[in-house]
Amino acid sequence: MELRISEKAKSISPSPTLAIDSKFKQMKQQGIPVVGFGAGEPDFDTPDNIKEAGITAIQENFTRYTPASGTIDLKRAICCKVKADTGLEYTTDNVIVCNGGKHALTNTFMAILNPGDEVIIPAPYWVSYPEMVKMADGVPVYIDTKEEDDFKFSIAQLKAACTEKTRALVLNTPSNPTGMVYNEEELKAIAEFAVAHQIYIIFDEIYEKLIYEGKHVNIATLNDEARKLTIIINGMAKTYAMTGWRIGYAVAEAPIIKAMSNIQSHATSNPNSIAQRASVEAINGDQSIIDVMKQEYVKRRDYMVERINSIDGLSCRVPHGAFYIFMNVKEVLNKEHYGKMIRTASDLCEDILERALVAMVPSEGFGIDGYVRLSYATSMEVIQTGLDRIEAYLQGKCTK
Image (cartoon, rainbow, N blue to C red; front, side, top):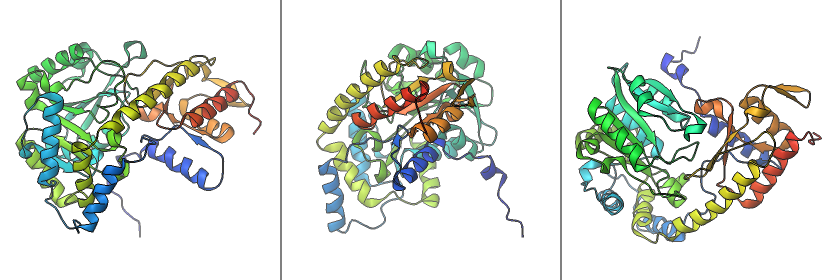
């Protein structure tokens, strides 16, 4: 019997970042001394007060179903957090708690898209955006950005990409994979365009607390009409080193949240009850972890930028947020290394992993050629070792 797979499932590509991370972890388990720049998660431990809140939840038997869209306590905490950060007033009807930020995005696309609706996605983009759109029967439409423009799109490009079928724009700031941040003036122009064309703004601000120069501006604050069209996506993972706890959320107009809640009630029911209780503590409790992480990330970023730009054939811009370097490798492509022609970033990453034992993420999965994403959410020792190995590889000194 032939096993049949749906055409939709066949059209969905696996996550290249998770694939790289999985291979890296497998090599580590085999005792291979590989170092990795692939992980998109903080290397800090979840703060003790958050862990203790989770333990207390278990001890108090807070281990049963909660409302499908999240507990009232956590929704209230999110409303207070958004008001403190932005001045915007939301009620619990405007909030859904999901099984991670990915789930919040998936629910969003499921709730707002009809078959054939288009979603504009600037490239380079986080690898999952296009696949999520396709899973919701939408059509991803890409805007290609340039390094000399800090990987930001112009209003002219946005206008050219917009059609009668355009339903939404994905805006990720600070950006994964580039670390670039849209400023207030740029966001105002985008908000005005979205309002004029009545398209949703899916505002992914998961790295909002990890900004090193300038400030984070939420596009929903710029005018009332933009607020109605904005679907804010956020979560616990990056800010509080809670990747494995799987709590994300969306904030939007009540009809959108209701539609997302209906979908979630059938797909997954509620997010983990224990993780929800811990997330209340994360939002309401001691915030000092954020400054500790930011200070360390700045040190790592500055070292990596200086070091990369000192290596022949490599270059990068200074990212202003998140914890990624988007390294330009175009000068070392279409050349022979160790007797092998290296034509693409994927070829380069594969050969460096094999010969130099360094795991990196090639840019093809982010919708652009000629770059490699390096995460500095890892120790300075790993960063130094990894860059030493990359430099040795490019100098022809790898003996493997």
